[in-house]
Image 1 (cartoon, rainbow, N blue to C red):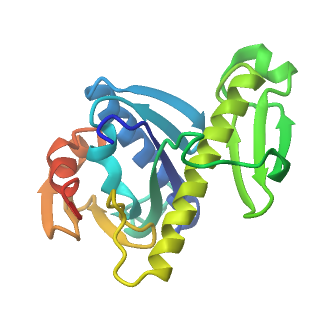
Image 2 (image 1 turned 180 degrees about the horizontal axis):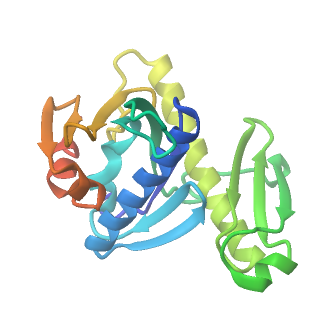
Length: 232
């Protein structure tokens, strides 16, 4: 799986609007890291990136989990430090041979995106919302100009989410089960980003790094090289 393409999904968790801002900041951090690695990056939706490149899966597979931030939000009037969290989910891109989806299980919905894409997106319902009826999983894709491309992106992302669901079900059914690819569970608090102390701490390896602004600018090499070895 060295060159397995991946999806990175960032969702705000605890902390309201600040959590959503933090999720966007994390996604931007991974985007900048991907650019430094010369990986190919594409947006699937507002909170999902698709990354493709050498060793992308092995380096980022253990970024899944809860990322906690401690900082003064831009919306804070009294200078108080807030603690918020966002959930990062890293999913490998799954082929049709690995996960088969029954077309009858799909509910396709189309709408007009109000993001990138110019007038074409505004006038035509190119954005896609895909609902997998048996599981209730919902994915969206709206960054491409054409509906056909967004349909493919949504289906590919759904396949990865179904794979994730199967993996998590295995973990609950089989005692001591360890995923062959070693993903951190999304419920696990894996890292804290403390802005007042200019420090990021990974709780799994019990190690901290300074120069937090540089890390948020995509300089993640030292961290991901160390954490990518977890569960190996």
